[in-house]
Length: 142
Length: 142
DNA sequence: ATACTAATTTGTAATCGTTACAAATATAAA
DNA sequence: TTTATATTTGTAACGATTACAAATTAGTAT
Ligand SMILES: [Mn+2]
Ligand SMILES: [Mn+2]
Ligand SMILES: [Zn+2]
Ligand SMILES: [Zn+2]
Image (cartoon, rainbow over all chains, first blue to last red; front, side, top):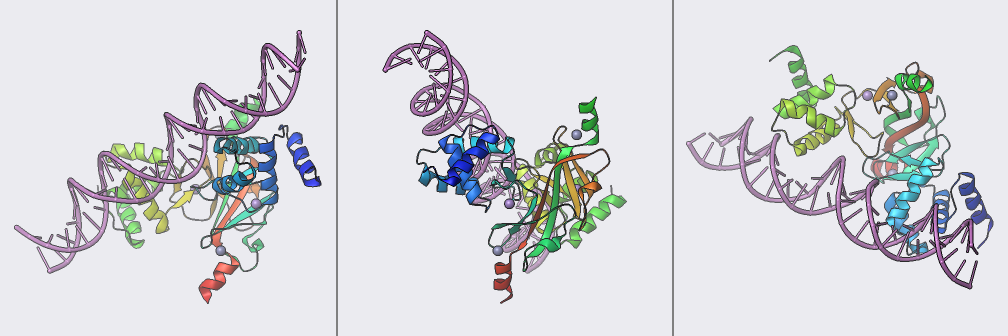
């Protein structure tokens, strides 16, 4: 019950300034354990087995909280389904158009498509960057 | 009325195997002219002035058709709003978290964040690739 | 321990973007 | 002019996400 993993999960939440409730612990543990970029529906149905009372609202609230606190990143590779990733390190995502799975691959500054796992074939590539544009940067400094 | 632009738009649609109806011409012309990655709502309200009878269903159908025929690419930089770009060449997109605008920037294989327009500050970067994974690739070849 | 306060969770209803569908319209062929 | 086909339109349905207020839980003061 109070095994190593559980303790780590708890510490990670606390370090991010998040009070480690049961729901938050289990949701974060799931994301840490299952690095296959689950959709909200997948998260909900799997977690519902662990916490039968879990509500979808809590799941959404918690995921938004994790994103806000930067311990989880939203994957917007598909417009119609939100996916989440507890691996916030710099890496790319590959979505197979046939089986629908989302895979990780190394991506650091200057990385090329060749970094894809062997056998993977790229058909479309898209680089998104979020931040501040020149004007907004100025207005904030001022 | 039958100016150069109009002709080009028409040819481009025909070359993609799309019958150039009035709605399709105007939607595509808008995308070609306004390269600021409009949302569907922006497209609808602006185009509604040109074609008062335009329906939202036609707009969605047309955009999906353009994407299918590969003369337009969907921008999934934000999960809650579809954006579209008639520039299908390889380039990156930058979204300002303050003003919300989506800017283009050069991105070809091996490009780094340094390629951002001067004054722009990156806070988060995400590389998405679509294609076929190793297994699915094999099963198709077979 | 009890009472009180604040934070969290839950269920339901509302919202928003997108798609399904069938009728109406326009285009092309016979 | 018929007839068939493709396109557009309006409305209804759908699915994902959020708003909201009640219920529950956790924390603090008495
Ligand atoms: Mn990942
Ligand atoms: Mn662009
Ligand atoms: Zn696959
Ligand atoms: Zn800006």
